[in-house]
Image (tube, rainbow over all chains, first blue to last red):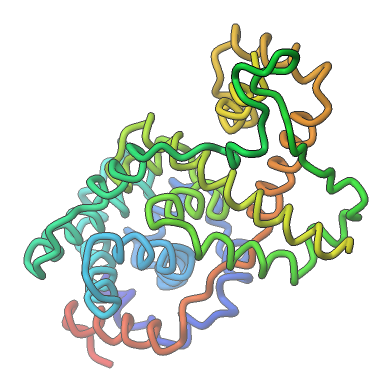
Length: 238
Length: 78
């Protein structure tokens, strides 16, 4: 760390590093990355800062009342990483450990700042609500003589939409807006699972929610975002 | 299974986290229900687009504040 502090500059944390660092560092293996951090490798620290600061900030904001406080929590987390890396035994992944540092500090700060409702509480409230995957009017009633509970207003295929259009910048921007409009707990779970591609266990650990609630929130979030995209493609097809 | 019951299990089905006995029932339903197949397909596409999201960059001012703070707290000279 002493070597790191003397050599690492703000420029090392520039945006371009995120693209260049993995190959140039050859630290794709987590063990090598941890060893590099212990050795005071500035590029390794810059790599993890670039890779995780955005998600850390997003999770911190779940626990504290303002972005400014969330930024302070992220800063404290990086200090915690530097101070604790020599004691890190590798029983969990580096990411899990990092987020456990963050959530511990964020919970404490959240209590100090007077935020009474932790993420686990409002996620539980969202899960308790009775939200169908699709609008009930899209289905025939349960007592329908021929097709009980089957489709009344069936979905439209996106089959006509070429692959290029599905992954176009405009489509991704629309999806980002759809995710931003979700209820908070759904938004966080789908962001971590599908955008950041975390495992369900990592999400449960970071957010302090049960596996069941994580599944419910993810399912609802995907259903809402899929419906938004369905509307988007219908408009696009005229 | 009805269509609504299928939709309730959809996310776990796509993620491969569903109980094998339910997978069999759901697969049988999907064989003959084109509408539910469309929802499966479009949900998979939704996840695919999510996976291809632009990474959210940390704003420069945030990065700078973060770095200066880490330097200060660690007692590093600027």
